[in-house]
Image (tube, rainbow, N blue to C red; front, side, top):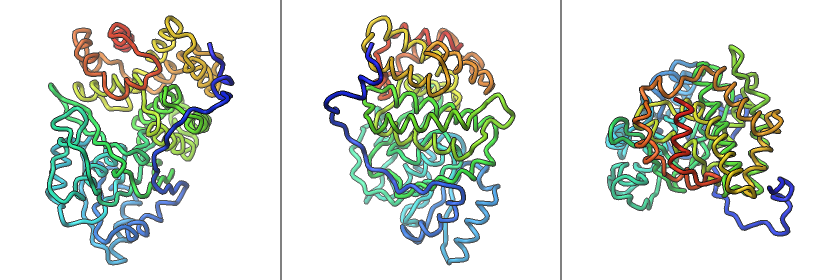
Length: 397
């Protein structure tokens, strides 16, 4: 098995690409800069939020009052749950020609919806979001342009503020969880203010934290990882473990640390892709309406165990093995067995349910596995067989 030092100290670093990033404004209080950024990019903003949580905060009142004070007329649109094709298309129809900049304020769902809406509003002719979803419909090439998009996360999990993809979900039989993806969808500005996390409910906070942890680990073990993403993930994991303790009533003891870790997870996944946890979580969210962060938290430990076992069995020189050992070290564990145990412990302390609590049975495994072969599976550190994927599901049932 290669050591981590061997993976770093090759005589030549393999070629890699890093995609462009938004302007990043990070730190306590940077939310106060939002209006100036809106004015920089447009005069008629559309504010896209979740159903209600953020609109009940003092920051929402401050924002709307300041916009009114400077003479900016704004529109608002609320996304209940994960954005569906109908919700996105309805917003595009409603606000076509009425706005010139889109601001997403909320969790990953609000940001993804805002990103997709901005992308469609900028087109010279109307299209439905299904036209651009990977693996759905005609898969039309996106030519743009997108309206300027500003991302303001109010949770710490998805890292959507730094990615070029908007995840759109259709629930139920025949459902899907697919991405509208293009470099032109990237935010112009990402305003990451840890103070916005203070109103986040505990259940949402821990589920989102497990999503961020999953994204950091999957980015680190991806075959597309490069020296820059490896260094960034190590930084993100260091801040994550210092900030997160789900055994406590308040699971986050450093909002800046958890916000930073989530942001880094989004930055890195945009460069490296993800892995089997997200590959399986996609059909789980589509078919059974499992919240994405919960799905990641439920799957992470057992997927890690199966990945490590598969590499020990048939790919002992896979560099991801030493990277899993490094993750264990960064999280204060002695090795991969202890890492899996810690993930199970956090899953329990976060009070995450089993898959069976969502009505999933072994009879559903074949359809879940069949639908899990999306882009995330392509960057899992080792190709898993259908039997291995079913073993993960069985362990989580």
